[in-house]
Image (cartoon, rainbow, N blue to C red; front, side, top):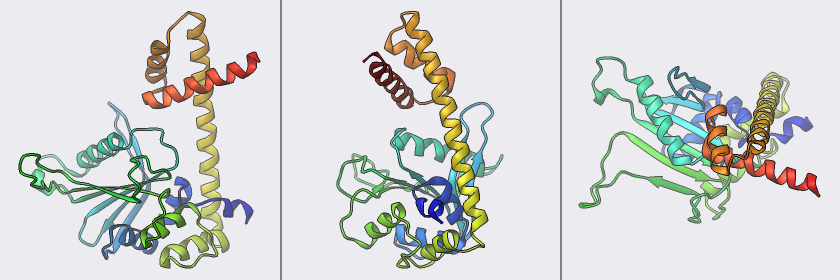
Length: 266
């Protein structure tokens, strides 16, 4: 049980396992959006393949009785610029759900929900709602997309903040969050949930192993380019193109390498 207890809902693998429970997913969305809804379908670790560009894997994609879609993402590290990531996810979903010859009006209503561990917007709020607005008239333009950013860093004592705190401290002994608490308990404390927990542990291990391989390759590229006298900008550009990673991630690898080499010299 010690391994199971170490997981919380900010771990995307465990989050995906728990969100497969439609009742837990319905509860979570209802609390986040402050409206009653009933999820009829949930896909987790939902892959959208783009063979000519960047593919994405969604943590959870849910559909309610009114056929509205909800993409829920959890993120512990600020490794990407979140609004542009959300923009790309929206474009990927729109392309997927609008078939050839369909009218644009048939695009489903879409809720993009991004939950992070830090208050990266630095506004001191646990919830940020993004709307499309005409500057000149202050008129809101509704294109069917609803964009929300939540974080588990700000605790203002509200019921929403308490839920977000639970996401990062998902104790099986905390029964305060209805169907979500039940699902967490089932996966952490019952034999029936053991298989799902094993899956989460395995996925976590595979992901960490893959991250380690990418990091190792990044360090090889950096070392080789430094030997040729390449400057910082060229090295970062090469990391981005060869590893297909963001500029932010490339800089992160480069800084980590320099820090490691600095310690070795000492």
